Amino acid sequence: MNTTEANAPVLKLQDIHKMFSGITAIENFSLEVYPGEIVALVGDNGAGKSTLIKIISGVHSPTSGSISIEGETVTMSNATMARSHGIEVVYQDLALADQQSVYMNMFLGREPVNGLGLLDRRRMIAETENLVKELDVRIPSAHATIRDLSGGQRQGVAIARATHWASKLILLDEPTAALGVAETAKVEEIVLSLKRRNIGVLIISHSLDQVFKLSDRICVLRRGKQIGVRETAKTDKNEIIAMITGLQQQ
Amino acid sequence: MSSANTSAASQGLANRFNLQQYVVYLGFLAIFLFFAVVLKDSGFLTVRNLSNIVLQTAPATIMAIGLVFVMSAGEIDLSIGSTVAVAALAAAVTLGHYGLVAGVLAGLGAGLLIGLLNGALVAYVKLPSFLVTLATLGLFAGVSRSMTDLRSIPVTDSVFTGFFGSGVFLGIPSLIWWTAIAVAIGHIIYRETRFGAHVLATGDNARAASVSGISVPRIRLAVMAISGGLAGLAGLLYAGRLQAAKYTLGETDLMTVIAAVIVGGTLLNGGRGSIIGALVGSLMMGMLNNGLILMGLSVSDQMIVRGLIILAAVAVSLREKSR
Image 1: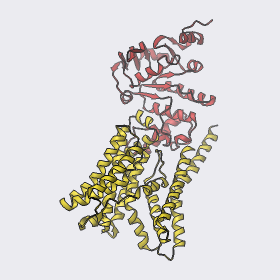
Image 2: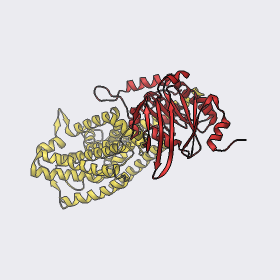
Image 3: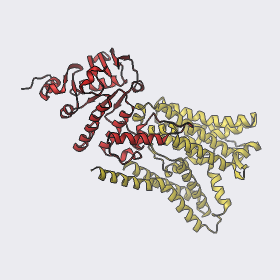
Image 4: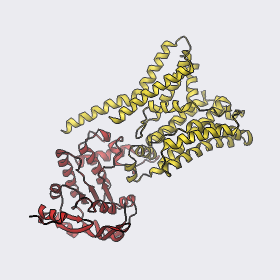
């Protein structure tokens, strides 16, 4: 896992600065995410985590600073461009179409067609079943309707979809916020298994337990400023809490 | 835990499938059997009467196909009620002056233009389709009245009336051909193409569709245009069958078409629907009309019965959605 330093970072943010109508939302933010690495982004509400996610996923473009993907500087003006660079987002609300099947959701907006221009359902089902098995997302079948699934199963489908399409980086926004204990454990297992696929993962979480369980490095934001990046193995909760709040713990 | 979840989920799935998917077929069968028994001496079961039902429902079925796309995308189109008359009149008037092809194009074009107008207001001005099409329903009802000063325009071109009305091709009446072709093409586009999938995704969760790269405004424009265009085709079928166009055409179809689509398993709020279901729903409404007339019910009683059926259909549809 620590051979990653040899590789180029999948994502490199350099001096990212973002202003919204004169108000600074993010300043001087720099971060690298390596393949197979899980980086956690933590900070209090309003610290700028969501803004950063939106910048990386192409929804907002930074006021200044550069984004590079595998060493290549990119400009992205919408989510489709980010996707074409191999970046996938698992949104907090999952962005699943509830009444459609699992396999249609897996290919939402990117459905394969056969020579006649008709949907290639067989391929969608087969690829869905493979991936669901690989990631051990326990759903009744690829044909199941999303609304018949539990919260954990839905989260599993959303992550599986991101995994299917992401060649470089997955952004996870609070992946377990709405889940119970057992389901959270299952989703954490899935997130850890993403490391084996050699893609970078940037995860936002409010749960420090989870951050320490999953991440290789932790990046702390406070009021739009980058407070620091720590290797998870070389820090502890007290230090991270102090960085998040700006107060020294007794 | 996962096996318990799985069986609960598939159990729920099975229940809903029974009700949602088959309610229209069961209803169709029940009504058919009811009339077959009650009206066995009134000529309900004759081939002539049954084929008449199909011929009479052809325009409503064509409109229903468009409405399945509209409702699946989470929108509604009330304007079809007056689009039919505008299209029929445009076709009849143009036909008289400029010939067959111009007449057909004028009818379809009028429908398509009304659909595009609705669609542009819904997709790009972001007005609710209910209000937009309620307004255009009234607007084009007025237009259809003023187009010919309430006069009925005869359609005498025998090619037109044969093609869109009383003609027979390979032993099958042209109205049945139109119905079958429209249903087949509609079904394939709805079920088997990316466009159909994107319509469903848009109605199901517009935000999810949007972040997945689907152009939601374009889908909304497209479904309204399809609905307008098909209402235009329905206008041609009316003009062909009745050999005349009048502002009253299609006036009473709106309720029937909405009922047919909802009974046919298309959700009012989008995300799920069926073209085949809408066809069966439309035939069911036609059969109901026909049977109630044969039973000697007055027009007002027919309206009451139809209203009750729509209520029941909406109740089932909403119950399904909220579960």
